[in-house]
Image 1 (cartoon, rainbow, N blue to C red):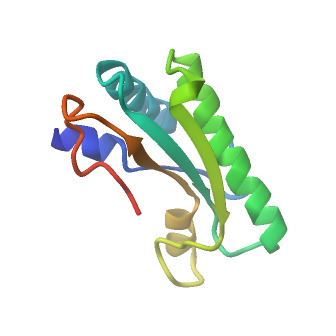
Image 2 (tube, one colour):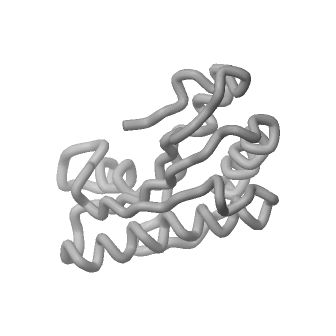
Image 3 (cartoon, rainbow, N blue to C red):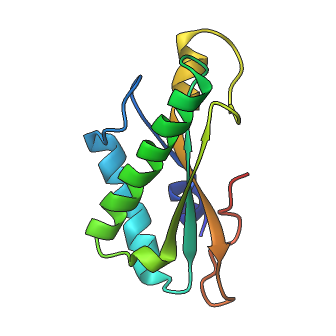
Length: 128
């Protein structure tokens, strides 16, 4: 299930955007497939931003990113009852530094498995 854990790690966004590009959609198609194969799994979709912009703007952008992922997955058949969203804005960077490479790593949505039973076997897929 290593591939499942990797598919449930994170997807990235362009600067100041909550739009899903083709690469992100492809990764989310894999997430939708995993969700379909594991009906007891629920996900928390966490929206994140880089440090540029105000705190309130970044909280809003993080929410739009999480909701864009939620909307895409629900459009692929994942019940909304199995998806939750939260924004962390710029508060939980995955990379430090004030340069584009670090900022690009921080413009993301991550997944945290919030429920699974033993049959789901998506061990190690939580991200925190």
